[in-house]
Length: 77
Image (cartoon, rainbow, N blue to C red; front, side, top):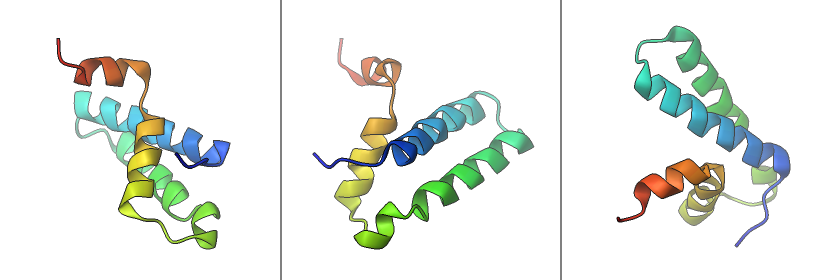
């Protein structure tokens, strides 16, 4: 597994949380703006200037951004 900078992982966690909030309350302009800002923050992070992001790298980052609650929702019961 790759090691990502803490601020990049934090931005991804905030992105995931904001996305869930927007799913619960669609049409909230402030949430859409925050999601847009966090997307730009993650996509244009200096970490990606050193290496080209692959789909696998994005997937790993998204997995790091998920909380324990997200993981438990995806586990079969």
